[in-house]
Image (cartoon, rainbow, N blue to C red; front, side, top):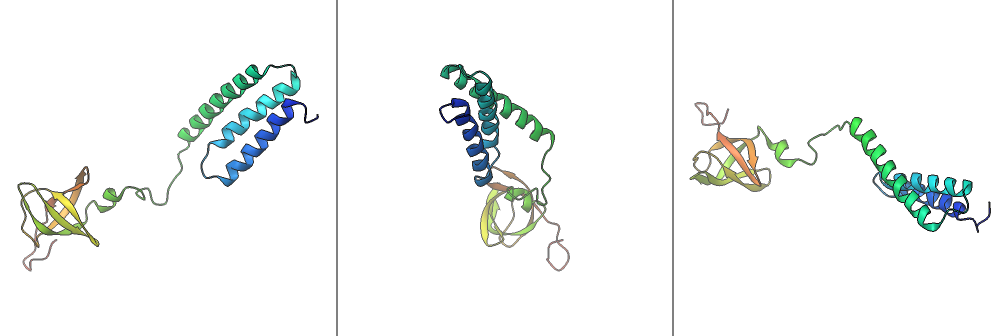
Length: 154
C-alpha cells in the first residue's frame, strides 16, 4: 500500500478525523471518519474506482453513519446530574420573590437573586411576596403568596 494509492489517503483521512474527534468537542467527526475509512477500504479493494464514485461513497457512508449514530444516541439519552442546567426559568419555578415594581394591569417587576425580572400576574404592590409559577417568553408568571399574620410569605 503506497501513498500513490488513494485508498491509503482515505484511511489517513479517517485516522485524522478520528483524532480530531478526540480533540474537538462534539460527536460528529467520528461519523465522517467512519465514512472515510469505509471509502478507503473500498478503494483498496477496487483501486480503479473513479473520484466521483469515491466522493459519492464518502457522502453516502457519511449520511448512513450520521443516521446510525443519531438513532443510537436518541435511544440512549445521557442522564444529567443537573437536568435544569440550561433552563434558568425552570430553576426558578416555585421560588418566592419580592415585587419591586408594582404589578398593575398584569405587568410589573420582581427581584430574583441579584437581578430584576419582568413579571406578569395578578396586581400586587411593591414589597409583596409572589411565587414564580411559569414564564411567558422572558417574563415570569407569578401568583400571590398567602401571607401569615406577621406579613411574611408562606
